[in-house]
Image 1 (tube, one colour):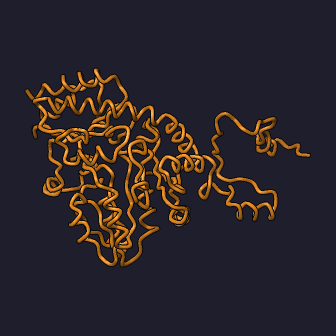
Image 2 (cartoon, helix red, strand yellow; image 1 turned 90 degrees about the vertical axis):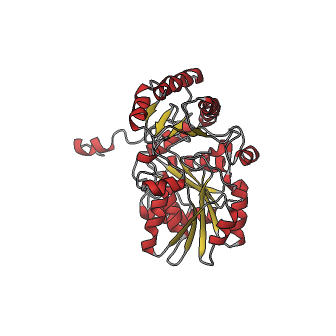
Image 3 (tube, one colour; image 1 turned 60 degrees about the horizontal axis):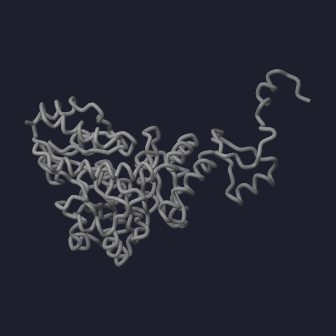
Length: 390
């Protein structure tokens, strides 16, 4: 019988008594490890891939993976500590010295940086325009193992024909990896169109509350199993509390994102007609270069992201941002509130002006992540602020 105070402080209250087997909401498993009764019990956990140490497996992370796998229509998912962690781990699990990657030329800036950094490990990357399928196919080599793109590019909202690109990849014995963050599974599921891996930054629309950083990769059990083995060594697993919050956020994702897409569609039309705006990038606008493709492949809407061109007058751009009351600047996207971003000083700040202009990113480009506010208020906020250019 334990009597001493120091031991009792450690032991008392450590076991939940009288609990029911199925709580309404799954508890948060903040523990770093799980107890085994003896060596036989420990071997059983290992053989069943049960819970032993948090970095290897955690119930909250597994629950989130089950939900993400369903949404992306895959076989399994790897849940990571960030979207970039998901991308990095997938790359490292699928590539080796001497391999080659073909990447779209308008990717998120840090993804391009990551691909450049892989060169020091003997992995080469060729960057081309994926809307030119002939150029894409001509860039493929015998050593090409991965073709990488985003469904909708950041920040120009260009769209890729994923099915056509997957056909090119598989004809050449390569794997297609698609970052589906901007589209979300509500609009598009890359695996249904031939992609081998679907990547999502869970930080964005999935969680939707701007309080979690996380990422996911969804694919076959074989590819995800290999990636998870590496993930455990890299240590980039999502923690249990973030997993719980993200799973809770996803429960309302369809409700949020549908309203966000409706708001974005309305706002894009208003901005497109505003004389102070030089141009708007949004897939449902008839002037968008991939408008017909968007109509063919997207479901439920055209996304909650848009970008627009302003005159390249820094003082007036500053005044425009200052005049906004509802919309605030934020280095993220996908939350329930509308935010503004300036790609020149955020997603593509590491590129020279010449490099950015080749990508189509001017000094007047602004990116908007549209939230769930009343659309009339959003329209009035932008319209008022844009008057500084008159």
